[in-house]
Image (tube, rainbow, N blue to C red; front, side, top):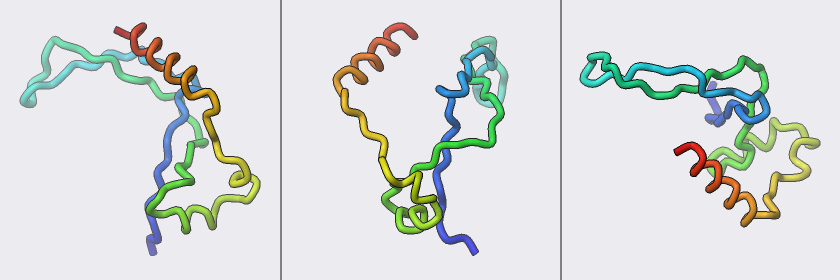
Amino acid sequence: DIICIVNLQHNCIDLQCTDTLEQNIRQERIETSRTKPTIHHKSTPHFLVNAYSLHNYAHIHLVIPEMLREMPFRVTNVAEVRAMAVQHMKEKK
């Protein structure tokens, strides 16, 4: 029986996935000459789990080992992280 849904995320940052592929854009089922960058994900059996999901927290909490529940990820330098994110977005334009 299915008890709940778990959100798993691929860890592109640590795996250093790159946006090296170009994919043709389709419009109304017809392939156009326009392209868009796509991510080439590296294969891995490791994923990030949203362990603090509001909807399924009780179920997820029960199956995660205690050593992984001890210290939640917290950003202590919020302004610096936001500034870095803005800089990355500007560089991609």
